[in-house]
Length: 330
Image (cartoon, rainbow, N blue to C red; front, side):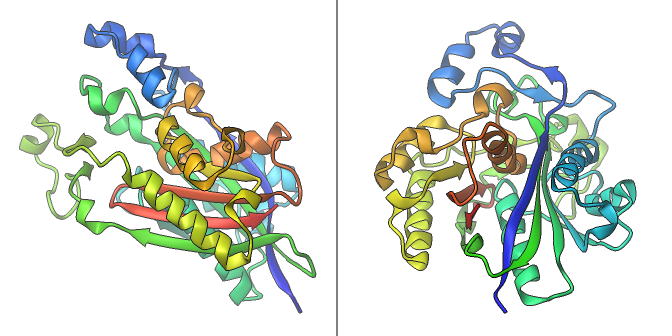
């Protein structure tokens, strides 16, 4: 029996509130639009309203994925939410979704490896299905509501980050060459203190002093080496390609973290593949962290750019620094 894991469907959701670059031009009193478009390809972004939270975004993306697959919530065996902007410190965001969706048979847990979280969760979910026949339908969601953690006057963070969610339904099947092929995880932990939300947990509990100093907001404390993502993304792509016996040029699509278009294009250049093999969505949605890869995947699938039997590499990176890659035959 050849038990395989296929991507049965995708879904995504972004809040209605648009925040164009010109908003920051006016707020900060300088032209940030030109730099954002030239260096990152970000023109617009979506932020949650005051009434919206990350569970709302995840729920909308999840419902779309379930509807497209024709799978009822009651059939789900497991729900994994990848986020570093959870609904609460505790309990888990996934438990909220299990209740809202009516997924009465599903176990749940959250996973936090920052913006690499979705691909990490996808890897975990695929291995659950392969290893245990009790898991046949696993819903994996990347959710991000970083606008809640932004100081709008901090140019280094407020202009980049945005909100959204993307979902993938993984389903067990047999006797097919499609589905999950391999994965790769990597961490450069020496960078853990360079960017993050450093207050509000056990290292620095919330206090009046912390709040007054905006310690609970996202902070860039050091500039990352610009070659870091392209170098490690390339290594991971080459490793996964070698594992499954293909060349990097045989990969039909590279769905990469949607932070910096120049980093994406440099990676593709190192791999010897054309730019059009990487779906790009940051121009309209900004940087949506753990949601950006499933959102880009869903966008390409719904537009017919990614088709059945295409070979897709998903590679993400995020704070920590954490990196994750997964290969699927669609």
